[in-house]
Length: 332
Image 1 (cartoon, rainbow, N blue to C red):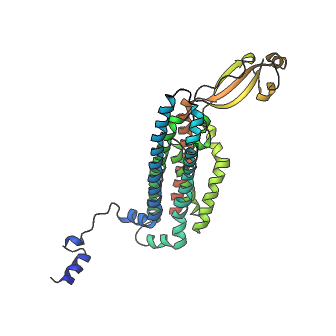
Image 2: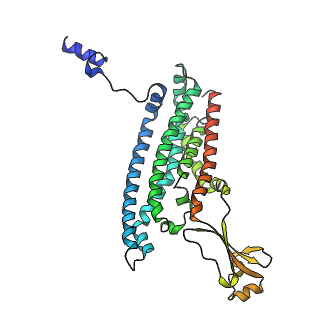
Image 3: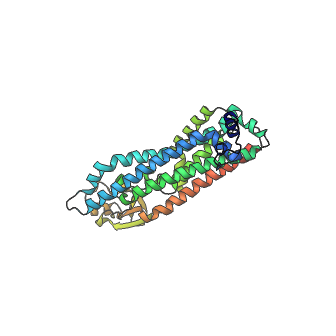
């Protein structure tokens, strides 16, 4: 056989070893969806890997610092920690807060809007593929990538933050930059933003417009909607001191929820009711007999996070199901 013929056989996948291609992990429709969005998916996976490596390296450095500092007498641990690690933690919390935004704007928004804008869905669904199957595979792959990336980043950041939780953010783990970036919460938030971006693509044909709307939803969520979902938290714990003993001391690792003053009939009044009085007798003269502190203990944090994440995840699943149902029943 001539050299030209051998080359032709190899190019066509003939008997020659050079013509054999490695088997693909994905085939059919999943492979087509991966090819369509591979740039965004690969970018997310690479950025996730880089972020995890950075945070795990910082975790090792932070643990070494804490071990040395806690065995050294006379070291102001909080001040030294802030000088060394305040900026890295601030950068990491900013990066984690961008995970839901990226999921909504760059993964969810182009998912359906891009197909509608370029006519891809009409081409695919004329090749013996139903709209329902096409949407299911697209949504399923985007959900998988979102879960992998957000879960990996959350695990890395949580493992870095947890040993130093009393020092980061002055120990306030209930603040959005800690509570929303650790445990299961980032995964649930990322899936919700992904679902919103995909759903918007059903009604708006232009991809850039949908990306802008998805970004706007991120701001609305942080400012308004997030508080609604946190209403399902457990009741705070309570400490009460006689007014002569002043405000109860916050337990170690706990975060303050609210302060009250209590009158003789058990009625609650604002903290400022007895703020300017000089002596406890002055407070009692105004009818105030006790100081009340409401707080959340550190051991309550996992339950609060899982409750919040479950509510957010339920909203995300409902929106994804609605998107699939609606997309199957109307032209795209």
